[in-house]
Image (cartoon, rainbow, N blue to C red; front, side, top):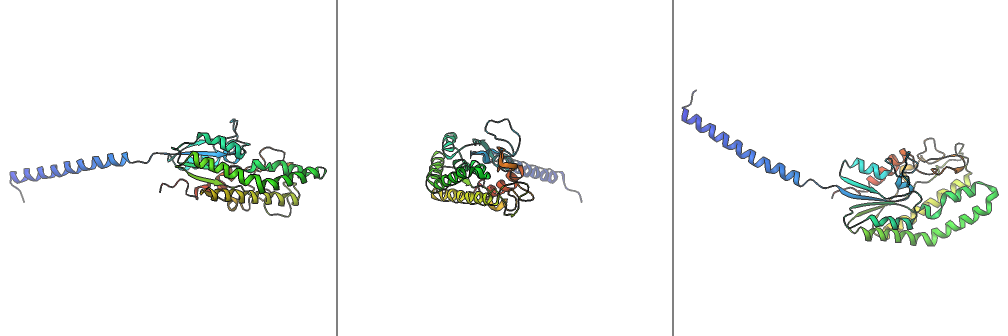
Length: 278
């Protein structure tokens, strides 16, 4: 069937108008979508060597910070959704984290904290308890740790977290605990540490984690328990996710390996909802 020329021209004109109208609406929609793309969330990591990543990868950084640390892995998994500033440093105590908090501001949106172990000097205690000749030092160190866990540390943890919350009033704050150093095993051929020392070390870290959790709750921030993720992967296990060396003399000992950071810390922190946009 053929159409008169006038009708054909009218149909073509209508189609062109529809096409132009559709294009006119589509362009602003695309522009709006681009305009509302969320900006990266400023994220600051605070804490000690566990947050710095010391022991997980070689680094020339004075604080031991490296790309294998859980904060760096978290930022990488966000695919540009967060911008990381890792202020954590090997050897940091709760008092040091208070000083680290100077980098926080009202613009900070995410904060993680891993600290408290250096306040107890746990590794030094374990070293003194390895030798029966240092029995007095072991006993004195144990008493000092018990005293700190009971009085000083709860106060210092609260002060640290309160300082962070005050310095970053609009931030979502997550505080992590520590993995238990030793797997539950009667024998430990790879790490010649007496059973009594291994048991005591796990007891101390359990109490440390409890103190951290209490301080977090008191300040209305989230506590992340990493011990479930490390179950079966402490020292003396077949596949440890912690660095272990004979006699506990290496500075990296007890620290998470790259696997410990990626499969122990990262999933626990990610599951906390820290980076959720809601």
